[in-house]
Structure formats: C-alpha cells, structure tokens
Amino acid sequence: MPSTTTVRAVALELQSAEQNLKGTRCDTKARALPRTTLVEPTVAKFPLPGKLPRVLTDLGVGIDTVDSKVALQYSVHACPRRMRREIGLVFPDVVGKESELLILPTFQRTESSMLSYQAETQAEKDAKLHMFYRWGAELVSRLREKGYWADITDPMSGLALFTNCGPSLYPDVEGAEVLLRYAPFNLGNCFVLSHPHWGTHVYPATAFTLAPIEAVRQVLSNMQQDCHQ
Image (spheres, rainbow, N blue to C red):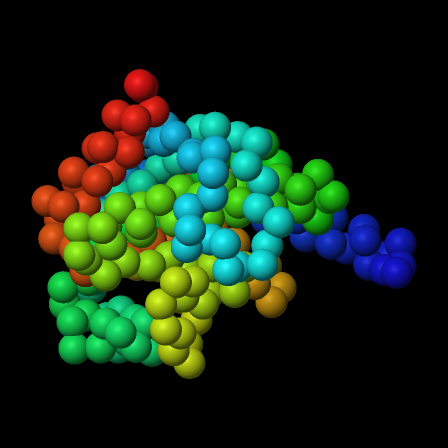
C-alpha cells in the first residue's frame, strides 16, 4: 500500500499537470490538421447492438451490454509515411499495403479525468472500453461483409484484436499526436492525451481498415442512421 507521502506526491503531480494543460489547450485547438486527414473530427451517436457481434465472443472478457448507444468523436486518416513501418509491425497482414491503410482514431468523453487513480475512474475506463469493443466490432463486421480487411487494437494492450498480431503495439496517444496533432504529456512512465475540447476527460481507441474511403463513409453513415431508427 502506498505511503501517505507517495499519495500526496502523486496528487500534487496530477494537480500540476492539470494546471499546465490549461495553457496548452488553445494552442492544440488552433493547430491545422495534417493533409492525411480524409474525414475531419466528427462527434456522432452510434447504436450498440444488444447482442455481441460474433467477433467478440472469443475475447474472454465480460463485456457489458447495458448501454444501447455510444457517443464518440471519430475521424479518418490515410496512414502517414512516418507510421507505415511501425503499422506493419502491429498488423503483419497489411505489410506491403500500408499506403492503402486508413486509420480511425476515436475518443469518448469521460466524466473523470484520465489522470485520476480513483476507483470511479477505473470503472468508467472499463465501461468506455466495453463500448469501444462493441462499436469497433460492429464496424469491423460491416467492413468485412463488404470484403475489406479491418481490425481494432485493444486500448488496454495495443494488440490487434481480430487479425494476426505483430511484435509491436499500437499507441493510441502517440497516434492521436501524429494524426490530429493532439498534444500528449508525460506523466511518470506513461503518456496522457490532452483533447483540445475535453482535456484529459477522454478515452482514446483506434480502428483500422484497407477499405476505400467511400466504403468507410458509407458504413459509418449506415451505423449512425441505425441509431435513429
């Protein structure tokens, strides 16, 4: 069990980090998006199927199916040159096709700051993780039905969930920095994301596909329309 001194030190570090972020959010918001951005950041609601998609049944995780909808921010990006080598080490199946890969970073707004170590924060992280599993699995299933390769990485491990895993892990926070120019900061041994509107109250996760942008747009549109039926 951590000592009182250690707990106080961590609390002070968290407080200092939050104060520092207040001065950086405006700068982050003002940065232009990279040319690889095909769909700009969009916040939308998507339905979550009551029955888990088949691709989730082998995860061995007690995924919560209580929530019927999820609100998240997504965008679509062509894989930048600087990321292609590492992407091939995360997804061996896309080696040689990295230039065709599309990356979809997503963000769910949270009540708790992701800097917090409270039990409530961990419970909210688990809930957001399960919602991403369900949203991502539905996206992957629909793209696969059209004949396209697609996958998501596990935000907990950085590993590919539904295709072959490579020796490397995908870092959601660093990915957001490259694709969207969102500024992360180092807190001890981990990097924490600062969203331009939500600060550290955000849960990042990422999807990937070799589908053309038109097909991705259509699938995302269909998923959103299902939310209003």
